[in-house]
Amino acid sequence: MIVPLCTLVVLFYTAIALADTITPRAFLGCAQVLNSRIHCYGGATGGSTSSGSYNNPTNDHFYMDLQNFNFNNVSSAANNWTVITGSNGRNLLVANSYHLATTISNKSKFIVYGGLGPGAQNSLLDDPLWMYDPGSNTWSTVPLYGQYTNYGAMVDIGAIQGLWTWGGKINNTAWFAQTQLFTLNYGNTHWDIVNGDPADQKIRLHYTATLGNDGSIYMIGGLEVLELTKDQAPVTADMLATRWYDTTKANWGAQTATVSNGQAVSGRTYHTTTLVPESNSFLVYGGSLFTNDRNQVQTDYAYLYDYVQKIFTPLTFDNNTGAGKRSGHCAVLYNTDIFILFGFNENYQLLNDIHVLDVSTPTKPTWRASTAGHPSSGASSTATSSDTNGPALSSGGIAGIAVGATIFLVGIGGAVLFFFYRKRNQQKEFQMDDPRQQQNATTEYMLPTAFPDHHTASSGNDQTKVDNLSPIFFSDSASRLKPTTDERELASKPHGDE
Image 1 (tube, helix red, strand yellow):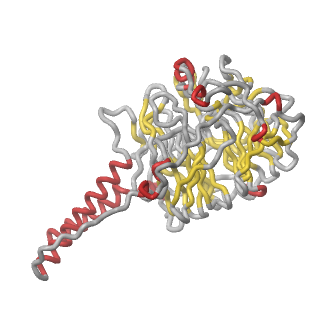
Image 2 (cartoon, rainbow, N blue to C red):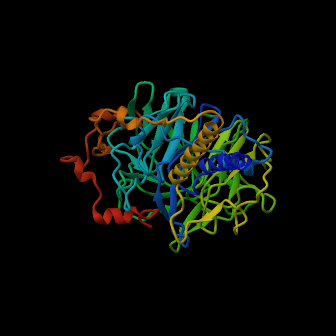
Image 3 (cartoon, one colour):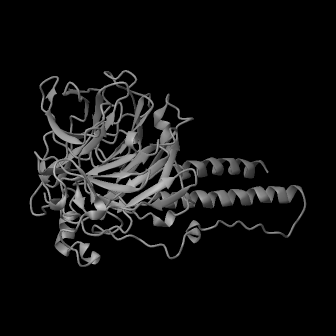
């Protein structure tokens, strides 16, 4: 009887390890929820290792509880994820990547916006804006303003209960967005429109937008292109040319930065920008840029940007420490630590590792202890190439293995009890309710309508109610918003018209 019990223990801990390891991926969305958890959704789990273009999206939803996080051995945390499979409204989630994620209402709700969807080509999403309520374990959709965008940015402005979004491409088509920005008052679920910068008719995509302590949103990097066009190729935005939007005065501006050591700052997309607590600085991390059809990860991968002094300061770390060079990752602030999660490295390996940067001393960030080095040149055991002979085991498959192993363990436990007590001819059934059955079968899905006519908006920076805006084209049928074949091929490239 000792052998079965030992087997039981080994299989039990094996099942736990399998269940909580997430498939390597990039271009997912993660955010801090409820002050003590990091929630993530989706991501691309496969693609080309020779160019840095990734596909095979998932609709995984998983989280990590930070209350018991071991900051003394960060590398062990890769197995600490919990996959959520039984949430209400789970059927609303589609396989997705290249989407945006944030939290609202004092971090009590997890928001996911846009993305490329599940298709081999870009898909028109029926429900582009989702909200997860962890209190009720429920997903729901949020009404839109008539269109949605991809490759833009999204910011929570908690002081006014506003969700801010600007730039990108319209409805997964080849059309670039208008210069106007849109804000959702999530207190009453009403959208407003604000005119764009009258001094600059270009929009950005693949950039970052981050709220500073001064109430302004700073837009860094990415690509630039003239608004409401589809035939122009975007150009790389100058990293030193930062655009901003003052959320208190509702006006636009720009500033030109310098670099502390005079070096050039490489242009980039798919980077992250995170506010460093108790400072006027952002951590600008990672990023890549398509050059000669290859998504080259930049070597100058870490900076502090002081948006008051307008100075970039490059950061240098010891070799083989920290997250290293990467792109398509997520960065999440927790207290005075910034988590760098997932993405791909300069060898085009998809990653599922976790690194934590301690920014308690804002001018001198240091990496938390880890037994693994940074995932460059195959240094990290969690760096996994997507160019394999077969498909990688998805988190759904992993969860299935875990469930199967658990059922097997229950069977062994039952056999032990059967042996020691008495024979019974009884079978116990286990049943899980399908949360999708709890949803209204006649739920209406909102198909995005035509985008507003920016020429009819009020002058200056006045806000205009979206309800009163008229479409500029595609007005006769919502179905005509679906991209044409040429537009789908154009939009399928990570940088659109490049």
